[in-house]
Length: 478
Image (tube, rainbow, N blue to C red):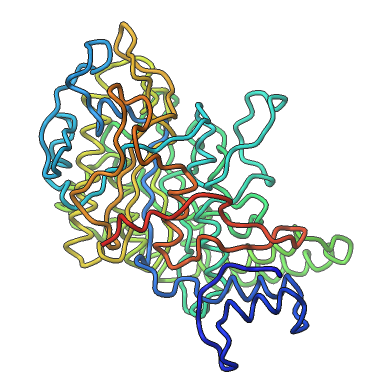
């Protein structure tokens, strides 16, 4: 008998919904497998979840565990690093002296110290954003660009399921938003893991596009002005100069052209293209959408609190997005000029910009969400794709190390002031309670009220689990 994981619920026949799906999957009720799975997708998604929204703070490059949340002051000088630990409000947690604000709100945070996986390079950005390993072969060489065959990002799965949710017709914002840029865009490409992949481009994130001043510019480190911080969806900037009537005429002409072509090319690509056009047209003409993306509506004092750098203003925009109703918002700290969390060579960037910048923005976000009554319904995740090697270099840099690194969870019922997992004496490997990217992804899905064992259909109408292994960390929720 085929068993489909679902949400136990009595139906009018007296059977549980799970039992009805089992029987249907066996063909006894005349249901096809795709039909059973389609019903499974819709039923229960976003119902009774601990979170209404997720803000996924993605620190690309790999923040060092030993310079942040898993310091080892008793280790040898070759391991412990140049920074001093300070006490926090969490029993047993000492963190970097450059994270003093976070130390003061650690009673609202769960620190996972034992994230771990074997993919020891930056293409683990696929693993961390999808919950699936990056499976390209060695023959692919150094190609890091996203492909249509990649696994869909968690945000894309959320967008996909949201289109079938009972409130889909009422939703005025996209449910998957990526700020301030697509990952890699500041370097001239788009990295794997952030898109919808085989799920179809209709479910890609709606991404804003903040530009650098010049090739050597790092907008994460300096103050950004409002002209640069034009947080609008790609293409939205042109709509102010186009009247609605003119926009509709353009839409009509484009539709005529597309209809002529579709008679020759009826395929999955066109189906997705139709959805993209319809969604984009409705969004660019939405007053709510334009208002939500206008960061100047926030007070100067609050913007200062978040930090006038790119990460700070992007996190503030992320809060505006969930407040307006978006379900999954990724705020990425990218690596536009090589000085990033990818700290092979220690410099003053880690001490003067990276840690203090995160400290300022992260604490502002958690506090702001709490003050607005949004923290209880927003899961905030802060994580990179890996950590750094336990042993430092002569210049106090550290190499790639995916075997043990931290992740912060807050909001949506997460028990604050707790630690999950213990690393060994060098912060090299988990000593207990290892957490995989699959576990984290299932935790995020579960928090949103999405069955972490859900199946969705791929392009060949085959049932595919949204995550293939792992368990949600339900014990972290109160």
